[in-house]
Length: 229
Image (cartoon, rainbow, N blue to C red; front, side, top):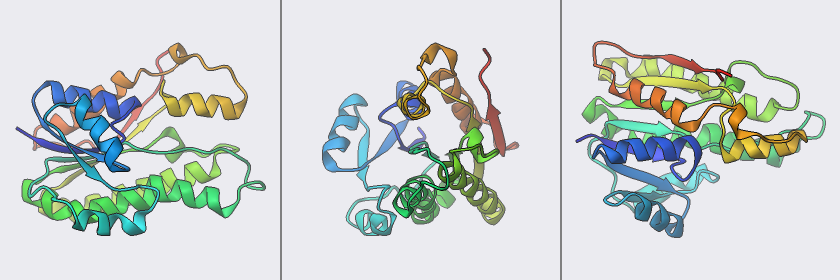
């Protein structure tokens, strides 16, 4: 039975991945921002356990983890959580930049650092759910795209550093996906939101599970998923 740690398991792509892995009997460790949220997640996935840390405050993740039991072995670390806040460069204040960089880039880097011993012990797999914005930046997307471009750099560096330890690293770049985040994006863009027009989170979950399940003689480095409609 494999052990997976998932961020963002409460909704969207993360929830779809968690449900897939839970249904087949794998062990889930679900990152939650506080104890109350942790109880909600573990109730949804019986047999799972929560690990509490706030992605918005990466400086305190190490302290939070030091008060909780980390797994000795970790087969996959799935970074799915993320936030978005659009706006032109001329209007974005440092707070907006810090919020997105903290959650989308710095927290994943810190969580990965702290869990590398467990990943190395299992020759595990780190999956970063990035975004099409991590490959191309468009007007009003500067802060989010910068965080996701940085996440690609993190993944690429980590892959080279950990290859000798048997740790695999995959970046997944979904196009627009029908999630609560996408509803927020449409609201900020002033557009009507039709979830049927975009990728189903289950489809992205399929690609993530495929990458994790790939036999050890191969590795998916970068995987782009685009709307088929």
